[in-house]
Amino acid sequence: MAAAKPKSKTKKPAKTPKIFKGLDGVIVDETAVSKVMPETNSLTYRGYAVQDLCAHCCFEEVAYLLLNGELPTKSQLAAFRRDERKRRDISRDHVEVIRKFPKSAHPMDTLRTAVSYLGTTEIAWGGEAERIDKRRAMDLLAKIPTMIATDYRFRNGKNRYKPKPDLTMAENFFHMCFGKVPPPEVVRAFDISLILYAEHSFNASTFTTRVIASSRSDIYSAVTGGIGSLKGPLHGGANEAVMHMFLEIGDPAKAERWMKDAIVKKKLIMGFGHRVYKWGDSRVPTMRACLDDLAAWKGDDTWTRMSDGLQKVMLEEKNIHPNLDFPAGPAYYLMGFDIDMFTPIFVMSRITGWTAHYLEQNASNKLIRPLSAYTGKAQRKVKALVKR
Image 1 (cartoon, rainbow, N blue to C red):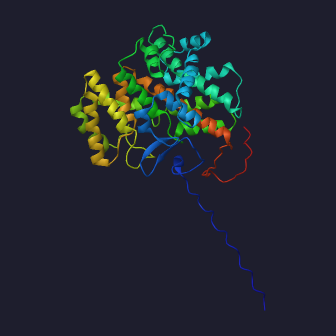
Image 2: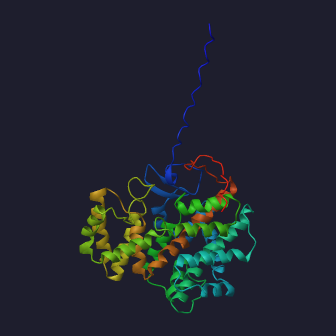
Image 3: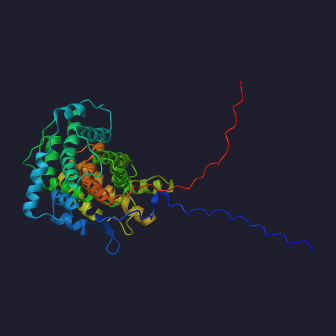
């Protein structure tokens, strides 16, 4: 009797890995810098709700908090301010580099290059002592507003205004851009916007910054990468896109009809929705209150009425809430800033979060190197070329 043939082992098909597009829902690391608390839906910096920080603190205090982990005492704040103010000006060579930028270039491109130039003034590597990178973080915090304002003046054919050491960061930025400081309610609205934009966990630009830091690259390279990521209209550039949308609509009376048509046509509508918040962006009420104050100061309620119409339809039709960019865009417009300045102002604020994350990544580093699911052709041989 013939022996039974052994059963052939059938090869199981390879399991298709689950893909999390855009890393949606993926937790890649730990951070103590910020978090949206699910139980309160509040964005917090180092445990403090951002709306409370806006009510009780100035931007310099929040910058100190993000970089050092705790709110400053009076003496610590005074020392922090002295340090920041003495670092504000940029070198003559740096000014000349900015002067030579094409006037047609977007301010995010000129800022990216201006920050990169600052990185050429010293040899820097990742993984250095924290005190060294904190000094560089302070330099970036102090000098980025000067870079932005200097480029703004030159692109408009005007001489630059040097920074003033007797002004707050918000006041000084208005001075460097316009040669004067507006009323306190305008300065306060701007200061609040800087607090609200300062940090937001592992957003696209912060994650970019941390990826670059993880290769043991320097802080200037990491921040330059963050600027490149923030430029995109799906991230930082959204505040510019919001104001362009408002100007396209033109008349508050047309807002509701415009929104309904945009929804039907499945048009990309900027300023609404956020991947992190479940019940609306917790920063919006604070920024909307600033927008209302600015509209009253300016005597122009065009953009607040338009906001109300657009928001009403979006909530009724899609149940989607606005995000911070929605009130921030028209707020900056009422302050007198050109639209292409909105995202550089975002950088002026977010440099605090980026550098806080850079320091955190360096303190407990592992190279960020994710895997991918290959969907190309199976391995194949190279065939000899036909002789011609």
